Image (cartoon, rainbow, N blue to C red; front, side, top):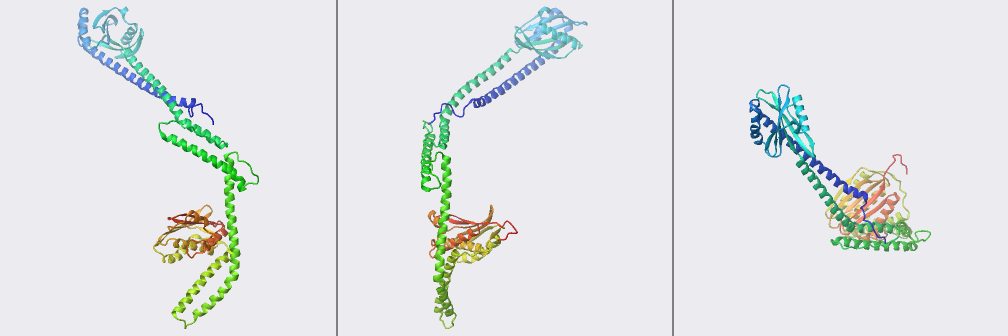
Length: 532
C-alpha cells in the first residue's frame, strides 16, 4: 500500500493560479483608489479656482487703484478671511504700471494673519508662476509642485482694476499631503487585509484539501495498482464531520474486495473452461478482461452449437414422423372427405366429420413444420417491399384479432426494400403477430413497426400481454417448449430457422406482466441488379 506524503491536486502551478486572482483583485482595488484620489484632487482644484475667482472679483470691486498702501492690509484681511478656511495660503502680488514690475506682495497665512513680505521671501516657484501670468496674460493657471517634501497645489488668476486693467495677480496654495496620506493608508489597508485573508484562506484550503482529497488520491493509486494485479487494496477511513464520505470509502473497499474475488475467479476459470490452447495464470486485469471476452465468445458459440444439435435432432425426428405418420393420415383424411361429401349424413354426423378433418389438418400442419426443419425449402430471395408486406399481414391478422377482446392495432412503418423470401418472411410475421394476439387474453395494444437499422430492415412486433420471465426467455425457440396450452413450440423454432436462412436474426425483449417485443432483422436490398 503506497503512502501519500504530498497534498494531491496542489502544486506550484496551481498555487500561482490561486494567487493570480488575489493579485488582480489588488490591482483592481488600487486602480479604484487611484481614481478616487484623482477625482478628489480635481474637486479640490476646481474649488480653489472658483474661490480665487471670487476673491479676485471682490478685490477688484474695491477700487484697488484708489486705496492707499497703508489701508491695503486691513481691507484685504476682511475680504480674504471672510471666504477662506484655515488650510489655504493666499498671495497678492501688485505691480507698477506700465512696466509691470512687482511693487509689493501681501501674504495671508492659515494663522489668520496678512502681512506684506519682501520679494526674497516669496517662494521661488510662485514667483515663476507670477511672471508667467504677467507676460502671458493668462486668465487662470493651476499646477502641483513639491516644496520641502510637501506636495502643494496652487491656482493663480489676475487682479483687475475698475477699468479692467491687470494690476497684479492673486494666488492660492494648499497642501495635498492629507489627501495623499488618506489614499496611501487606504491602499495599505487593502493590501494588508488581502495578505492576511490570503494566508488564512491558504491554510484552510491546504487543510481541507489534505482531509478531502487524500482518500481520492489513494483511490486513484489503488486503481492503478489494481490494473497491475495488485488487488489487495484498502482506502484508509478518516474521521469526517460528514458521515457520507466514510460510508463511500467503506463501499469502495467492498468494491475492491469484489473485484479481487472476480479477478481470482477469472484466473481459475481459464483452466476449467478451456478457452485457450495453453493454460496460464492471469497477471493483470487486462488479461482478465481478455479472458472474459473469450469466455463470452465461447458461451455464444456453445449456444449456437447446442441449437444446431437440437435442429439436427428435430430434423431426424421429423424425417421419421413423415414416413411413419403422414401416409396413414393422408388415407384417413381422404376417406373422411368422401364421407363428408355424402348427402344422407345427418347434421350431427356432418359436424363430427368436419371436426375430424380440421384436427387432421392441424396434425398435418405440425408434420409440415417438422418437415420444414428436416428439409428446408430452397426459397429464392428477391426484392421485397417491406411496407407492403407489413400492411398485408396487419390487414390479414386484424380479422383474427377481432375474435379476441379489445385488441388495438398500432403501426409505424416506413418504405423499406428487403432481400428475402416473401413467403417465408410473411409466415414469420404472421406467426409473431398471432402469438402477440394470443398473449393478450384481456385485450391490449399490438404495435407493428418497420424501420432501418444499419444494413438491416427492422420489424418490431410489440404486445402488452403477460410477458415472460428470464427463465422462459432462455428456453424460447426450443422444440416442444410452448407457453400456450395446445402449443408445440415448433412455430417459433421454424421462425428462427427461416430468419437465419435469410441471413437475418431475431431478438426478444420481455418483462413479466408488461409485455414482449420481437425484433426481426432482415438484410436490406442493396443492389438493384441482385440475383440470388
